[in-house]
Amino acid sequence: MEAIAVGGQVLSGIGQMQAGRAQQAMYNAQAQQSVMEAKNKVLQNRAEVLNHKKQGISVLQKLAQNLASINARAAAGSIDPFSGSVQNLAFFNVGKGAEDFFASTENQKILQAQSAIIEAGGFMQSAQYIGAGNLAKQQGKINAMSSFAGASSDAKNFEMFGG
Image: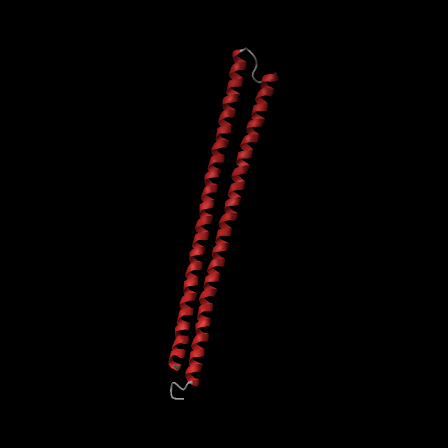
Protein backbone atom coordinates (compact mmCIF):
# COMPACT_ATOMS: atom_id res chain seq x y z
CA MET A 1 0.00 0.00 0.00
CA GLU A 2 2.88 2.34 0.83
CA ALA A 3 4.43 1.70 -2.57
CA ILE A 4 1.20 2.79 -4.25
CA ALA A 5 1.17 6.05 -2.26
CA VAL A 6 4.79 6.79 -3.15
CA GLY A 7 4.20 5.80 -6.79
CA GLY A 8 1.15 8.07 -6.88
CA GLN A 9 3.21 11.02 -5.70
CA VAL A 10 5.86 10.32 -8.35
CA LEU A 11 3.19 10.09 -11.05
CA SER A 12 1.62 13.28 -9.71
CA GLY A 13 4.98 15.03 -10.02
CA ILE A 14 5.41 13.86 -13.60
CA GLY A 15 1.87 15.00 -14.37
CA GLN A 16 2.55 18.43 -12.88
CA MET A 17 5.64 18.84 -15.06
CA GLN A 18 3.64 17.85 -18.13
CA ALA A 19 0.83 20.22 -17.14
CA GLY A 20 3.36 23.05 -16.82
CA ARG A 21 4.72 22.29 -20.30
CA ALA A 22 1.20 22.12 -21.71
CA GLN A 23 0.33 25.48 -20.20
CA GLN A 24 3.52 26.93 -21.62
CA ALA A 25 2.60 25.62 -25.07
CA MET A 26 -0.86 27.19 -24.74
CA TYR A 27 0.62 30.55 -23.74
CA ASN A 28 3.14 30.37 -26.59
CA ALA A 29 0.27 29.78 -29.04
CA GLN A 30 -1.56 32.78 -27.60
CA ALA A 31 1.63 34.82 -27.98
CA GLN A 32 1.84 33.90 -31.67
CA GLN A 33 -1.83 34.69 -32.13
CA SER A 34 -1.45 38.15 -30.58
CA VAL A 35 1.44 38.95 -32.94
CA MET A 36 -0.57 37.68 -35.94
CA GLU A 37 -3.62 39.75 -34.94
CA ALA A 38 -1.45 42.85 -34.58
CA LYS A 39 0.12 42.25 -38.00
CA ASN A 40 -3.33 41.78 -39.51
CA LYS A 41 -4.50 45.11 -38.08
CA VAL A 42 -1.32 46.78 -39.33
CA LEU A 43 -2.02 45.44 -42.83
CA GLN A 44 -5.60 46.72 -42.65
CA ASN A 45 -4.26 50.14 -41.69
CA ARG A 46 -1.77 49.97 -44.56
CA ALA A 47 -4.67 49.40 -46.95
CA GLU A 48 -6.42 52.44 -45.51
CA VAL A 49 -3.22 54.49 -45.86
CA LEU A 50 -3.10 53.53 -49.54
CA ASN A 51 -6.75 54.56 -49.94
CA HIS A 52 -5.95 57.96 -48.43
CA LYS A 53 -2.99 58.31 -50.79
CA LYS A 54 -5.30 57.56 -53.72
CA GLN A 55 -7.74 60.17 -52.43
CA GLY A 56 -4.92 62.72 -52.18
CA ILE A 57 -3.84 62.01 -55.75
CA SER A 58 -7.44 62.22 -56.93
CA VAL A 59 -7.85 65.60 -55.20
CA LEU A 60 -4.77 66.95 -56.95
CA GLN A 61 -5.92 65.60 -60.33
CA LYS A 62 -9.37 67.20 -59.91
CA LEU A 63 -7.72 70.46 -58.87
CA ALA A 64 -5.58 70.46 -62.01
CA GLN A 65 -8.67 69.73 -64.13
CA ASN A 66 -10.67 72.50 -62.45
CA LEU A 67 -7.90 75.05 -62.92
CA ALA A 68 -7.50 74.04 -66.57
CA SER A 69 -11.28 74.38 -67.08
CA ILE A 70 -11.34 77.80 -65.41
CA ASN A 71 -8.47 79.02 -67.57
CA ALA A 72 -9.94 77.57 -70.76
CA ARG A 73 -13.40 79.07 -70.17
CA ALA A 74 -11.96 82.43 -69.28
CA ALA A 75 -9.71 82.46 -72.34
CA ALA A 76 -12.60 81.32 -74.57
CA GLY A 77 -14.59 84.31 -73.33
CA SER A 78 -11.69 86.70 -73.96
CA ILE A 79 -11.22 87.20 -70.20
CA ASP A 80 -7.82 87.31 -68.52
CA PRO A 81 -7.72 84.04 -66.51
CA PHE A 82 -5.11 85.43 -64.12
CA SER A 83 -6.97 88.43 -62.73
CA GLY A 84 -10.24 89.50 -61.16
CA SER A 85 -13.01 87.08 -60.28
CA VAL A 86 -11.50 84.33 -62.44
CA GLN A 87 -8.31 84.48 -60.38
CA ASN A 88 -10.40 84.49 -57.17
CA LEU A 89 -12.22 81.36 -58.35
CA ALA A 90 -8.89 79.68 -59.11
CA PHE A 91 -7.51 80.62 -55.67
CA PHE A 92 -10.65 79.25 -54.01
CA ASN A 93 -10.23 75.95 -55.87
CA VAL A 94 -6.55 75.76 -54.95
CA GLY A 95 -7.38 76.44 -51.28
CA LYS A 96 -10.09 73.80 -51.18
CA GLY A 97 -7.90 71.27 -53.00
CA ALA A 98 -4.97 71.92 -50.66
CA GLU A 99 -7.23 71.51 -47.64
CA ASP A 100 -8.53 68.16 -48.91
CA PHE A 101 -5.05 66.99 -49.89
CA PHE A 102 -3.52 67.82 -46.52
CA ALA A 103 -6.45 66.19 -44.68
CA SER A 104 -5.72 63.03 -46.67
CA THR A 105 -2.02 63.30 -45.84
CA GLU A 106 -2.80 63.80 -42.14
CA ASN A 107 -5.06 60.73 -42.16
CA GLN A 108 -2.16 58.72 -43.61
CA LYS A 109 0.15 59.87 -40.81
CA ILE A 110 -2.42 59.05 -38.14
CA LEU A 111 -2.93 55.55 -39.53
CA GLN A 112 0.82 54.95 -39.72
CA ALA A 113 1.28 56.05 -36.10
CA GLN A 114 -1.67 53.89 -35.09
CA SER A 115 -0.06 50.92 -36.87
CA ALA A 116 3.15 51.37 -34.89
CA ILE A 117 1.15 51.40 -31.65
CA ILE A 118 -0.83 48.30 -32.66
CA GLU A 119 2.32 46.42 -33.60
CA ALA A 120 4.11 47.37 -30.37
CA GLY A 121 1.03 46.36 -28.37
CA GLY A 122 0.94 42.98 -30.09
CA PHE A 123 4.58 42.35 -29.28
CA MET A 124 4.08 43.44 -25.67
CA GLN A 125 1.11 41.12 -25.27
CA SER A 126 3.12 38.33 -26.87
CA ALA A 127 5.96 38.89 -24.40
CA GLN A 128 3.47 38.73 -21.52
CA TYR A 129 2.13 35.40 -22.78
CA ILE A 130 5.63 34.00 -23.20
CA GLY A 131 6.50 35.12 -19.67
CA ALA A 132 3.34 33.51 -18.31
CA GLY A 133 4.20 30.31 -20.19
CA ASN A 134 7.71 30.24 -18.77
CA LEU A 135 6.29 30.83 -15.31
CA ALA A 136 3.75 28.01 -15.76
CA LYS A 137 6.50 25.62 -16.84
CA GLN A 138 8.66 26.63 -13.89
CA GLN A 139 5.72 26.24 -11.50
CA GLY A 140 5.10 22.76 -12.90
CA LYS A 141 8.73 21.85 -12.15
CA ILE A 142 8.48 23.26 -8.63
CA ASN A 143 5.26 21.35 -7.97
CA ALA A 144 6.86 18.19 -9.36
CA MET A 145 9.90 18.60 -7.14
CA SER A 146 7.59 19.05 -4.17
CA SER A 147 5.77 15.82 -5.07
CA PHE A 148 9.07 13.99 -5.56
CA ALA A 149 10.31 15.26 -2.19
CA GLY A 150 7.07 14.09 -0.56
CA ALA A 151 7.45 10.69 -2.22
CA SER A 152 11.04 10.45 -1.04
CA SER A 153 10.05 11.39 2.49
CA ASP A 154 7.20 8.89 2.51
CA ALA A 155 9.49 6.18 1.12
CA LYS A 156 11.94 6.87 3.92
CA ASN A 157 9.16 6.85 6.54
CA PHE A 158 7.81 3.58 5.16
CA GLU A 159 11.37 2.22 5.20
CA MET A 160 11.02 1.17 1.60
CA PHE A 161 14.74 1.33 0.85
CA GLY A 162 16.16 -0.47 3.83
CA GLY A 163 15.45 2.03 6.61
